[in-house]
Length: 401
Ligand SMILES: Cc1ncc(COP(=O)(O)O)c(C=O)c1O
Image 1 (cartoon, protein in one colour):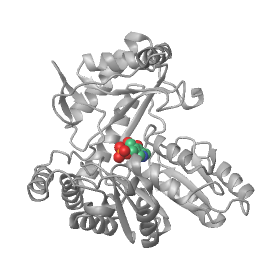
Image 2 (cartoon, helix red, strand yellow):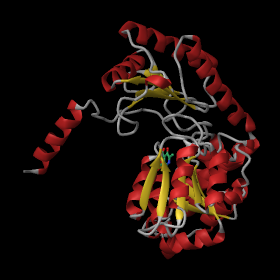
Image 3 (cartoon, rainbow, N blue to C red):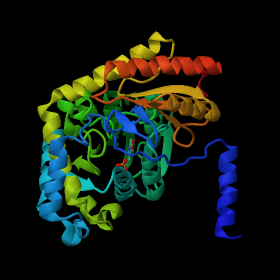
Image 4 (cartoon, helix red, strand yellow):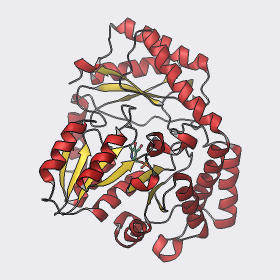
């Protein structure tokens, strides 16, 4: 069978399942209004939460870095790519989060795919939340450790698993997201932290969507839940969401950083982050600390969106952050609502399996600090109209599979 014949067969199956995906072309980047080929739309699908990606100071920092350092680091960190600006960014990130050290990665997917196998192997046991991000799932697979999936956020199930496993595995790791990327709820971090200490398990928190957007000074989910930074053994922060750049970093002890430099394959065998992205992240970090209004407005906008949707009878369970799911259930219905919203000037991404469990296809709405109230109300109203025209209702928690 030729490659093309194989590809067509696979694509036919994907189409039959209603999960066929294609790329959409944007003519400008991710402010709260975007330009698609012929049409402008209000964007409710961006992770540029604080709208820093196009902030003049961030852009200027990137331009200056390109002039001063070039557009590439020119090698991996362990060969010739370790620039003084990488080390400066890492010191600033560590200081911001309050952990001993930080180590920057090409992106969050690479960090998760590399760091979990660097810490865990055949003799070890990982407890991972059922809604952990795909990159955590893939990192777990690559590690070859045993993996126990516990039902989303269910502390009692996690504790039972830890109790049964105690003394049997060489090392145990609990892996959770700070904010779940498709549901917009928090992990119950205080309880999870307490369990990790009680049962001697390491705690890994992927705070991709929490850093910059939640907690005092934007220091993310550990700070939000009043957990001291050094109590999170492994912290993952993103540079690509609230920080308006690209890349990610692992925060933790000096020993963790040294170990990753020596054994983490996605760090070792990959080029260092390019200078413009490094300097853009440094500039964004300064702005988000100087301008708390961005974080405050982001969360106020999130609350406004949830309230507006509730006001027109659309539930948003379980969101309590800037990520607000509206769960329709069927793939076809979700994508048709997504299409119709776009035709009416609102870009709200439909999300299907495998990004979310089967039968829970949804619109994943995200707000930005710079959305206006009128845009938010307009989205809620328009969504109500589209759902009514199609006779669709939103799944309530008890109806979810
Ligand atoms: C929870 C979580 N972890 C990791 C990633 C991957 O991060 P990146 O986009 O930097 O590869 C994402 C992506 O959005 C995410 O939502």
